[in-house]
Length: 339
Image 1 (cartoon, rainbow, N blue to C red):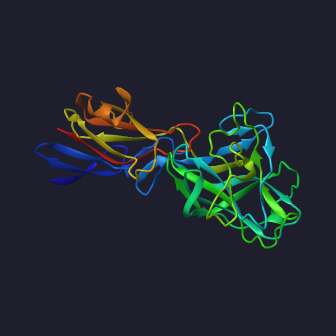
Image 2 (cartoon, rainbow, N blue to C red):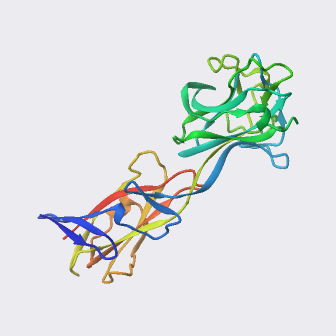
Image 3 (cartoon, rainbow, N blue to C red):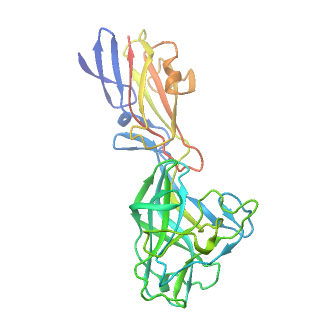
């Protein structure tokens, strides 16, 4: 028999009575979001909320130190001109990321009259591979790049649509020109690269810079040898690293026995995110104030807890994302059985 049950402090829930007990659905849409600045409900799934932008890449910092993601020196050796149409650098995504733009350090020579744009493709070995996964709009080179100094300037290319990349995936950022017919030795652009062989080697966390003279069909290392990398960042949504949502479940009687071994939730229902969920659980007699006897338990740990007796079951989900917040923790519906 299926009936509707009112759960204190929440919206209506559906429960199912059977000889094995009463199954209560714990709907994500019915949660009380305790930290609305950190957690949101989207398409019936609770998830970490985007709170800003965070960047990842190979950056130039003269006052810093050569490291896996930083270079204290730079160089400009390979140009996009009449014989070279694209330059690229690969990166391995440190986690799930939703990329909205890429920033490159670029320099112009003379007054190039064509547009520049960026693409993101999959990586294979040291080279870009396959079709474009994301593309930016075109930017007039001469109007966009105002610096002619060797250090160049940072130019941010907004992607036409955000690109979600998987943790550990290999991707390639490519700098391209719409046409190279107007480019020559006196009018061209350059992607500024790191220039420290170390030790430690600058930006060693990334594959070496590549260039192509045939719009990306074949790639080479050119004058950048085996230690220079393009200076770049990918700019992605930054998500809250913590947050909570909670439920108060009402069995309508104080003698109800909540079978914790039947506790279940759909964690990361899309299969894309890598954030984690832990739970606080407890029972009590209050329909408004929760008390928790077990804290920060994984779903597997909750299922090993002894049954809890009481009218109200309190459940709080904790959303955990490693700093700096590239990833997302997500939670769909859950359920539990009481006798």
